[in-house]
Length: 210
View 1 (cartoon, rainbow, N blue to C red):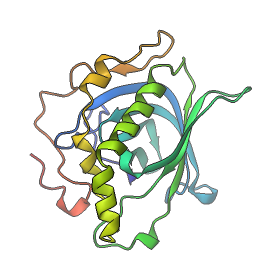
View 2: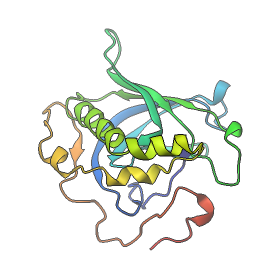
View 3: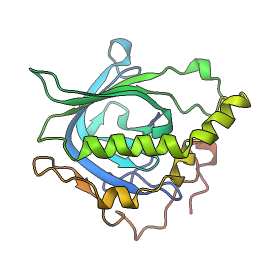
View 4: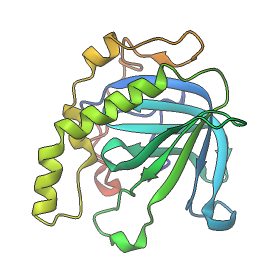
């Protein structure tokens, strides 16, 4: 994860090089723990907003800031234990865990794994859920060799941007569109007129935008 990723003025995440946004889902509530300075026990935070999904990450953007919290970035290669939940008396939701993106100059032990939940408060999720699970399965398949190589070499850092090699065009073209799901699929990339691109998750190098 990465707290408060860079956003355009319209709230859309600034893309990485080779990043393709697949969809945006409004009307969700985001539940996350271990957020520093959230002011609650265990750093627990819950707020409403919109979720963006790309071939690299999921990004939740809050409707309005909660303290210092404006957005939360979850690299797909760092997500685990994802599960679609359909409780009888509550809204459908997607839960899981996400590992922190640790700055190069800091130790992994200083950062905790987060538990997250995306709660679908408005409308269905018949478009979002299949696309998410298909995409994260493809990301893992296309990056299996890379992650195994990193583990074999005892590397603690797996580059989240490696996921950009995952093809998504075909998946998007054949996506099922649930009329009850307000998910918006991006047939054209948003903010395509902007040349601004991020090159890395590492903050000290992020001054090298193009």
